[in-house]
Length: 119
Image (cartoon, rainbow, N blue to C red; front, side):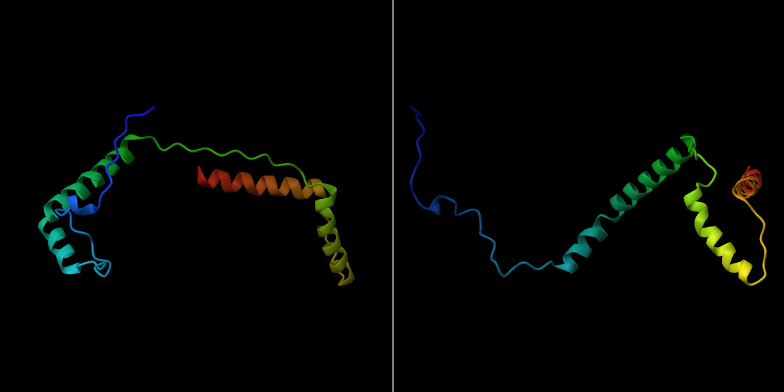
């Protein structure tokens, strides 16, 4: 069996550790400000060191990001909503002649022009 000796007794042998009173749960702001004021050089040194490290890393590391997109012509289901709008416009004697292929080619043309402006 185990040879564990457990002493039964009270907490009388811990008198050097004062128990925290439950009503003293407030923060002394003046004391906190005083501690921060005394450590202001250390705080500023740490902030300055991390700011310099961040700037150094931002200049050293290359800015590299990419994105890719697959652009496909519209499906017939997607084109149906636009066809409904065209039908409503034809009632108002506005005849818009555009098909799916033409709309897709126009989109690609506009997309290429925006992309060439960014480059």
